[in-house]
Each structure stands twice: as C-alpha cells, then as structure tokens.
Amino acid sequence: MIIAVDGPAASGKGTIARRIARELDFAYLDTGLLYRGVGVAVLDRGENPEDAGAATRAAESFDPALMADPRLRGDEAAVAASKVAAIPGVRAAMLDFQRGFGRTPPDGKKGAVLDGRDIGTVIFPDADVKLFVTAAVEVRAERRHKELLERGSPSIYARVLQEMQERDQRDRSRSTAPMAIAPDAVVIDTSALDVEAAFEAAMDPIRKKHDR
Image (cartoon, rainbow, N blue to C red):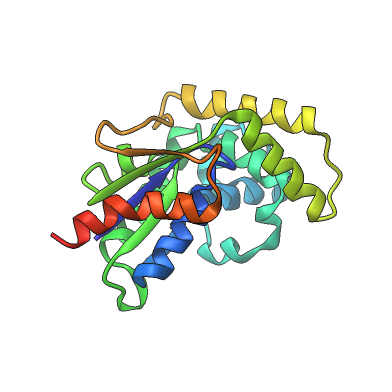
C-alpha cells in the first residue's frame, strides 16, 4: 500500500505522514529531505542552487546518507531545496529513488508513506490513498516562526511570512512537477485543527481503503 501526502511547507504534512507510518508500521520517506540534501550539497561545493548544471550534478551523485545531516532542518537548506526542486534534471534524478522506496519499502514493510509536493500527482499518481494537507499561509508562517524561536534561532514573523509566500509561489509555478492537488486527493486543512484531529482526518480515508 502506498500513501501519498502532499502539501505546502509547515502545513503539518510531515507530522501527519510520520504518525500514519507509525500507526500502520509502514516505511516513511520525507522526500523534502532529498531536495534539501541536494541543496546543501550544492552549497557545500560553493555553487548556486539555482544553477541547473550544478544542482543536477549534485542530484545525480547524491548520497542518501546526507539525509541524516542536521543542517537539512535549517532554513538555509529549505530555501536551497525549493530552488533545486524547480530544476528538471534534479527531479528526474530523484524520481527513481522515490519510486523504488514506495514499490519496495525497506525493512520488509508492507507499505510506504511518502510526503512531499508531487507524490500524488507525479511520483505515484496511482497511490492507494492521496492526501493534500494545507493551511492558511499566515498560520503556517506563525508555526514556522514559533518553531525557529523554540529552536533558539532568530526569527522575524514578517520575514518568515514573506519567505513562505515566495516559496509557495516557486512550488506552484515551476515548470516541472508543480505543487498541485491531485483530483482524487482528500484535502485536509489544518488551520484550525490540533495534531490529533488532523491525524484522525487523515486516517479516515486510509482506514476505509485498508478495510476493503
């Protein structure tokens, strides 16, 4: 069973996807970390994440071990990721990795949960269950702002909001695999939901499919 969880930054999709994977004992892949890893690899080489050649080379030689690097959780990696993710060569290089993970989950798991921007539209358009987790951009910016402060990182809400709006625009308007809601996806707006309510909303279509 393959479950696709898509949505914009700070919508709660990662939290929901990880919880689903634990609940079902499925393998979990945060595909955003792949692109963050490529972005950091480009930066480490002293190159520009918007340089298609540099980003594609980094993607083609990507070492999955880099996904454990704590730097990938930072804002610099997030910004770099949204830039490299718009490059066709990068997405092509990541395509096989993601599909292989879903079709043959590691550790003998019976299913996989993948979260990202284009899982239900491009990577697995035939996924058993597709979820699109979203929230108002102001709510998402406030979540990210709070997260940064709790982490001890300096943060200004207005700047976080602007960066998130810019990132959303890049994700929606890129020519290759833009962020979009699959026609058969279940949309979950977490703006006014707590974690438990969001999780239950996500599990409802999964249980219906799983119990058939």
